[in-house]
Length: 247
Image (cartoon, rainbow, N blue to C red):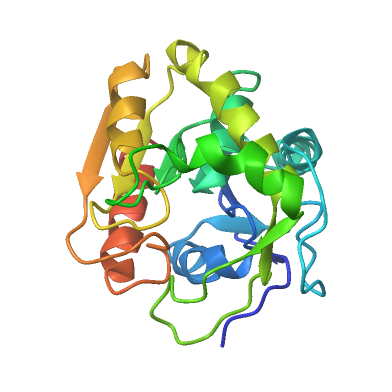
C-alpha cells in the first residue's frame, strides 16, 4: 500500500540515498524504489516539498527556492550521519538534484524522467510553456492528470498551481546553464512514451553533463512515472546496479 507520508529507512552501511519527488507529487512516487534499495542495504529517505504536504488536495503556490531549501536541509542532515550520499530525483526532483550536485559533494546522481520541457501535443505548433502566461491570466491552477501510473492508486495533489509550474520552468533555465559543472557519476532513465515531459530532455542532459561516467537507459513500455509503472522492477534493478558500481 502506497503512502504519501515522508519515510526514513535506516541501514547500518555508510551509504544513504535521498529521493526527490516530482512537481505536484510526493514521497509516494519514491516509496517502492526506497523500499527496494533499503532491502539492498541502503539507507533511504524521502520527504514532501513545501506546497506538497500529504494532507493537501489542491496545490498552493510555492517556489523552487523553497523546495531546494528543504532538499538542502535534508541532504545536510544525511551527510552528517553518512559519509556517502546519493541523490535520486524524479522529474522536477532531477532539477533539484542537479542543482544540489553543483554545491555539495554528492556521491552520485540518478535522474528518472528528467523534466526539461513539458510534453508538446502532436497537434500543437507551439510549446505548452508559451501558453502559460495566458493561462495565468484566467486561472491559478489546472487539473493534474490521474492516469500516470499503473498502481491504480493515486495519492498526489489534484491540481498544478501555475505559479509553481512557472517556478519549475525558471529552475530549468538555471540548471541548463550549470550542467557543465556536474562531474559526478550519473544515471539517466527515460521512457520515449512519456506523455508529461519531453523525452528529449534526457538526451539533452546526457550530452551536456561534464561527467565522464554517465549512462542513459531507455525504457520501452512506461509513461512518465517510471517508479510506479510497468517497468518499475527494471528501473529499481538498474538504479541498484549503478549505485553498487559507483560506490
